Image (cartoon, rainbow, N blue to C red; front, side, top):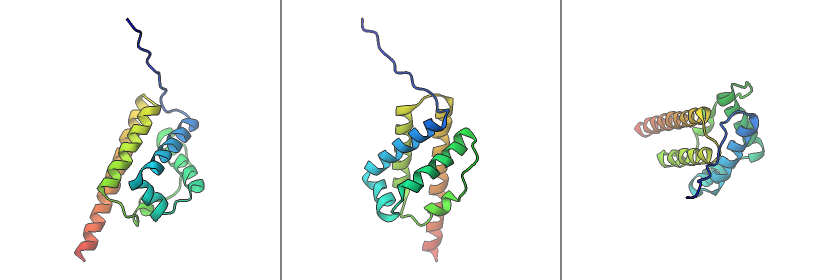
Length: 134
């Protein structure tokens, strides 16, 4: 009988964990044709400034660290994104985080990401409907 070796993953608990989570996630985003086109084509994201802001954002949500200032929704408002983009984003996010971590904080992080995606998608859809009604 073979012994199954289970890889033990840690929960998200440090700034280094956040950096790994963010860097590996955006590497996946950049490999995804649908999302990469928005980030690199339309928005022309400056990754050297975007990634540190994402570290701050997630450190605030996950670790309670102060530092992030900004209005994430306003930044996303002009982007040509729809339900399919959000589905791809959350799918990659969950896939990425599951590959790296496990635990209570990890599960809470996935819930927060799903909530953020749902809220953004709902608000953007409502704004689009309002524009179409004019």
